[in-house]
Amino acid sequence: MKKLVLIGTLVIMLLLLAGCGSTYKHIEVEYPISQYAKYKTLNLEIISPDGVDKKELKSFRETITSALQKRGISVVNVESPKLIVEILNFNKDSKFFRYALTLTVGGPFTQYTSNAIEVKVSIKDKEKTIEEFKEFQEFKESIHNWEDLKRTVANRIADAVYFAH
Image (tube, rainbow, N blue to C red; front, side):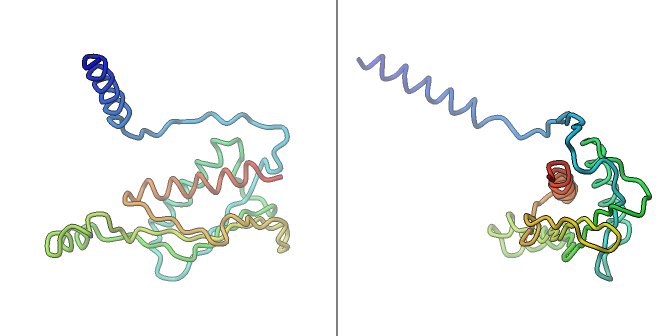
């Protein structure tokens, strides 16, 4: 009986180690081009507050465009329909400040990040809002890695457009 308990414990520990030992890896997903998709081509307009870094804004636009194109939605220069991404908060934290804060104060700030993107997303057709995505009304996202944060938000926007009905 003792051997059975010991073997069972070892098996459970091995399963726990195998399950917890892996790390998250981004998996590329092939989206089928749906004939039922509501939007096949869009014009992308990003509205941002003053003071947002133009280089970061351009990179965010390219990330959104790439995410849309993976889902079979073309971003072209047409008058309508227009995907409006209104940036309410676009904050990239200083790695130096976070590192200095962690060294001086210690533990709790190792998990802290001020990376944040807050957006509102809608689709307009000739100045009339035809679709406002409710999931972005109270949307705030914060992730340590800035590039992962941009990619996550862009993928959520692209998914909302892809699955719009």
